[in-house]
Length: 132
Image (cartoon, rainbow, N blue to C red):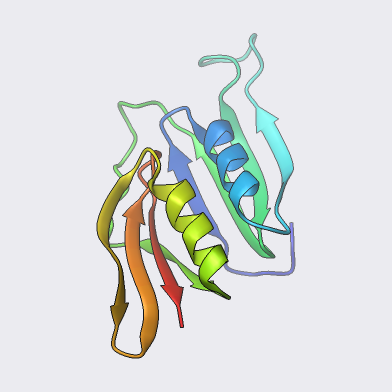
């Protein structure tokens, strides 16, 4: 784990590893740094992620799988803000995250911002994409 003291922790309905692989494929300088799963002989379903750690462009995250009956829904009230360095980066993030997700807003200019979009991806995580 990094020296980062506050880390976003995402809980998925048995799709944590798939989500982590998806996210690291989109963002540069990204990787899964640790992945611990429940063994087949332990309680619960074997193969579930109990602790996944990954980095997206230098920002550390954690993830886990949870049984659907206990899992709270993601909400757009909490979102991940991405400051895009240029139009190709914005377009890549938008195209990738919205492919099987939902576009809540944009892309469109807002005030002095060149392009802004809110997207909820296929895993239910909401992203704010901003190109200044």
